[in-house]
Length: 350
Image 1 (cartoon, rainbow, N blue to C red):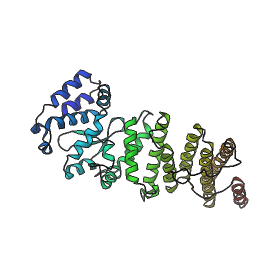
Image 2 (image 1 turned 45 degrees about the horizontal axis):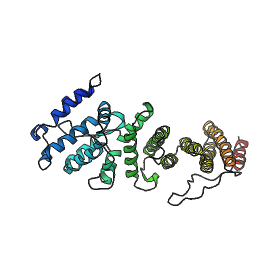
Image 3 (image 1 turned 90 degrees about the vertical axis):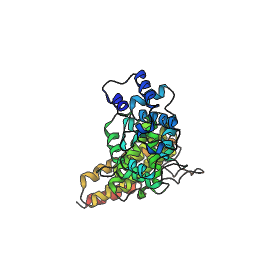
């Protein structure tokens, strides 16, 4: 394992011939060399091939190599087969020690031998061998002996790495992991910690932005990702970020000429910002209040323009489609005229 790892951590990317050579040697190792007791009742050669593909796939250059050879798609099932063959105690150790790898991957490391296995989508499903809800939450939220969760580390990476990070497959894995963790419950139940809700909200919005920019609209539930981001920000008491997610959702709908949903997203953003402006003024945070006021006015103007494009005077609740969630509502419904009256009343008291 060390030889394969060294091949990818050197300064220069390895050649295909070099990768072929180490993979071939690895596939003929004995179970004793691997020190994997769990191989005893398995097809040795098949397991070793899965292991080496999985290990290579945790490195950026390795993923590129496997894709060129048409082997990358196999890695998802490889990782599921390997993790599924593990005793519970080893799997638990690997989950608690999971780390971020190249391209935004989640990497599970076999203790003691250095074998690296990328978390794949099959493991995040509901079929046989998939991670349990406890394991999913442990993986995402709690890392043994570490001050930051994996979600927090990923969030930090999204904030400082270029738009190519994470790659498409890692985006799928992260979105699947979050959806499994949420498990269909209201997003505010994800955590009692406002900071963690804010981290979740940022990750969802950043992922939605990346996959939208790559044109992957049919592969990801972008409106739901942005909706959940807005709700999480709202419950994290971050109205400006909440509004940003809503406005981004409006932009998404507008690009698809869905002006009614675009107008509604901006209407909700205006409600959130107007409510925040009034609340901040009440507690003496006048500068912050005025900033929210200005942002609210912009959202009101955008709402009216989009509503007009939809043939309406103002935003209305979009009709519910079969199988879809009810239209989002956050905060108190405040028209611009009502907001201006309430704002003027507060200003007059100074």
